[in-house]
Length: 232
Image 1 (cartoon, rainbow, N blue to C red):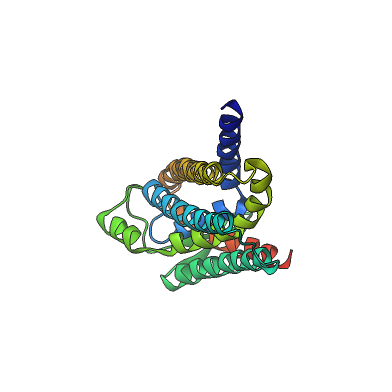
Image 2 (image 1 turned 120 degrees about the vertical axis):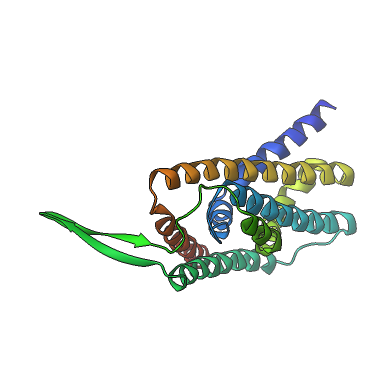
């Protein structure tokens, strides 16, 4: 019994750590920039991503363990390539949406101080709370779930590499381990979403024109990380 509890605790801890992978955090945060970035949007995006991640991870691992299947050698590499490609596409989409919606930059000079620029957008109103339209947009946006499915598939091969040794072919324990792992991933992603949302709300309240710059930064970060993921 103690061994089983220890094993499940390991699954929970590994899930918490796994959620903090750079590609997960960047993907979720960048996806949440559709509209005004706020705590509600980040939490909803994190939860939807975790739903897709847990679903694909559970289905793939359960099928392999239950039917004695093996993942082909190319599977892990292809899924990692898909993750990198998605990061690039998400980043470029955010950048395109930013500049298409009227984001502009202006250069300011003050006396002998070197010139600096500011990004400006058309939508600076709001107090960081989720409006009715924002809630409707979140409900219709299925991209976080789909991207979570790809992330979960990419993480299934490494998890399966250690599962047989841990559970000694006990399917029930293996499935419980996977469920605990996926639940821990969802919990940590929601915690991260809440924390990041709180930081974003405070930044937007303190610096009125920071939202356009944050969105451009996240778009560039996602595209750069995706390129690194692909070529590494």
